[in-house]
Image 1 (cartoon, rainbow, N blue to C red):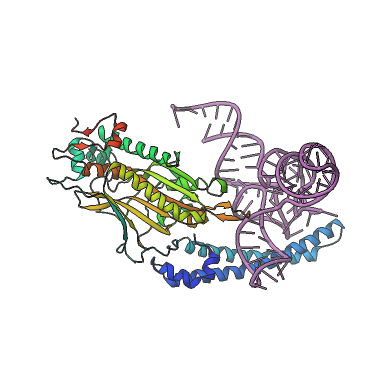
Image 2: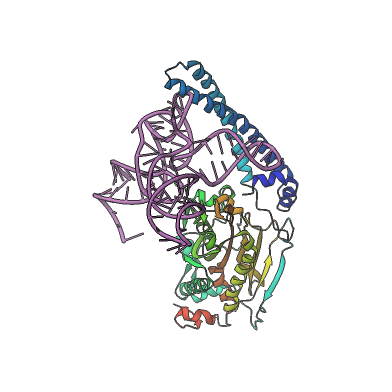
Amino acid sequence: MLDMKMIRQNADWVKEKLATRNIKAETIDELLGYDEKRRELIVKSEGLKAKKNDVSKKIAEAKRNKEDASDAIAEMQQVGKEVKELDEQLEKVEQDQQDLAAHLPNIPADDVPVSLTEEGAVELRKYGEPRKFDFEPKHHWDLGEKLGILDFEASAKVAGSRFVYYMGAGAQLERAIYNFYLDQNAKAGYKEVLPPYMVNSASMFGTGQFPKFKETKAGFEITDSDLTMIPTAEVPLVNYYRDEVMDAEKLPVKFTALSPAFRSEAGSAGRDTRGLIRLHQFNKVEMVQFTKPEQSWDALESITAHAEDLLKMLGIPYHVITLTTSDMSFTAAMTHDIEVWMPAQGRYREISSCSNTTDFQARRAHIQYRDENGKLQYVHTLNGSGLAVGRTVAAILENFQNEDGSINIPEVLQPYMGGKTKIEKED
RNA sequence: GGAGAAUUACCCAAGUGGCUGAAGGGGGCGGUCUUGAAAACCGCUAGGUGGGUCAAACCACGCGAGAGUUCGAAUCUCUCAUUCUCCUCCA
């Protein structure tokens, strides 16, 4: 959520910045119009309330002195009606303003590449050379099915499209990967958390999914309840501190969690229909940080660097790009995506997204701390995948495949696989 | 799922319609005394959000949340949330 006072005082700047995110200047003007109307109504209503309070005190005094106060009471009945009318108008304007404001994305940081499409993302760095194959590299879904470790037929029957059964060594590989990630993240100072996998609407609003997420039916909401299946562990992790004043001494606070992420993938019909890339349910190890404002940009680099380290340890080639103003998620002021090399597709695919949301989520979720002067300040929140587990499996299958269809297990994962070095065909 | 109870400021807690913008403790902070400290005593300790203002002054709202009754609500009514106890059910 953007600070209304800030918008009011820097309207032109806000228009210019949000224009890079496809927000029209008229939208800001509309918002400012609501704001002006709202404040006008507040002044009127509160003036009358002050009067009412004043006269009520006099009525109380009169009653105590056993004097008659019926004139004043009659007058206050009238004033009460006026207040009620004004407050009804006020509520409506506030609602309109709120609805509009809730749809405004974060202000992009100055060094975010400006573009109205995803074209224009800047490559920050590249790691590893894509492997040269002396045979035609296969897609991970072909490899997985042949090896008997991924079963898309069964999941289609039991659940539907965009699900998967991991079988045997596949399930074991998935587990090895997330245990490796969690251990590494813990080593880097992230506290391991096992959060709820369903959250209420206040939480979905706090991290910025609602209201848009609801409108575009991007997730799975539980019928007859206020609960939604989490689309990412970021939601329960960040909302852990919703409506709290955090201890400034303890900042930055770092959380990591493994969780499934549930997404409807509405609007991505026909895209990545095969394999592990785009599922309704996938595991992800998430990292979240709460920092003081002055720490958040360094924190973004450190989250990203840490996610990269995981890939370096696995030995998977990747590159890091900074997303454009319009390609970033709603809440982000800046996002670095890490994309891994997928040999069969011959291109890089996203495996991690690391964002600094500055105070945008903190304002929605009311997460504050007291600065040296005892003043309440909003924290900055950051999130990054460290990393997407299913996509890691896909990357490992494709990058470490052998001509016979077997898969070499990256060394760092072998201890997590009971010493196994290779995945071969299972029954 | 059923029944009962609770929810007041940093913590405990009083308070059933009007001098309660919330008694009293504790804790914290400051002071007196002391070489210093302890004890004792004295004082301060509702923060926050919104409005207002160049900035202030000031105003509104705040007793779990929301709605209602009333000229007036911490106090009455309703809905909801959370916690505790007892059933029930379960991993």
